[in-house]
Length: 322
Ligand SMILES: NC(=O)c1ccc[n+]([C@@H]2O[C@H](COP(=O)([O-])OP(=O)(O)OC[C@H]3O[C@@H](n4cnc5c(N)ncnc54)[C@H](O)[C@@H]3O)[C@@H](O)[C@H]2O)c1
Image (cartoon, rainbow, N blue to C red; front, side, top):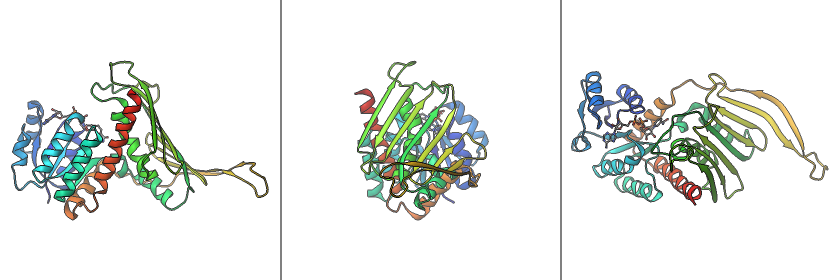
């Protein structure tokens, strides 16, 4: 079994601990909080518990490190772990600047180590279905995609809505479009905490002409976790708030009858929901990381996806503050 050490045992970290405890050998648990260390030591007597990352990294038997600390600490911790020769799973986003993510990717490539950012939605069976539909040509050419990630709260102080919420949708949009945006625009405002934008609207345009939009906010009456994909032949919606109908496919499209000389009509047909497996996305994500540790990082696709996302977030931040 792969030996794992985890840094960060807070709100999200405990979910990662639960999964890695079942799938691998959790040999180290690390957190700055004494209270959490005591709590986790009681639950995981086989793991060694520490407040210092150096203890983990000095263990030659430890193969991989999982980082679930606050975002501003990710880059430095991931760098330290890679330099110590450990494979790294790091929660999203792995860095707050494109240049930092570049450096992490280079380190992982030089040392043939896995560097996997926690892009949870890429392992969601509903998102996997969207990608499968697009790849199979079921929706026709992808024209535009837009996401809604809104709710009242959690109001964060150190990350704005773009970095906290946008990273999820951006990872999916870039995965579906498979291009780097040629232009990006972000508008928003910080209504509650100065400098921390709580409402952000983003627009991305890709070289092929595809366009995307993201509405990110924790000041909103609706709880929405939705992604709409408009293809030339069909349209599809992934709605993570739905319990059963996670993905809905609409046979709706524009249609240009022969000889109509540019006069478009619309075609509407069936609306249906394919079966989506009920697997926990986090479980699938953890399994993917362990598989990579076993087989090697290959072409570092996961880390390169992470770089694309951080670079785009960087550009959107420039536009938001510009
Ligand atoms: N994928 C998802 O859906 C999802 C959801 C929530 C959070 N997250 C991500 O998980 C990460 C953690 O978020 P959270 O909400 O669990 O935060 P949190 O504040 O609840 O937990 C962070 C923990 O890290 C510890 N910590 C901080 N610096 C440390 C250091 N240098 N060494 C050891 N321990 C340290 C803190 O004591 C705390 O217990 C963030 O990157 C966040 O973006 C992901």
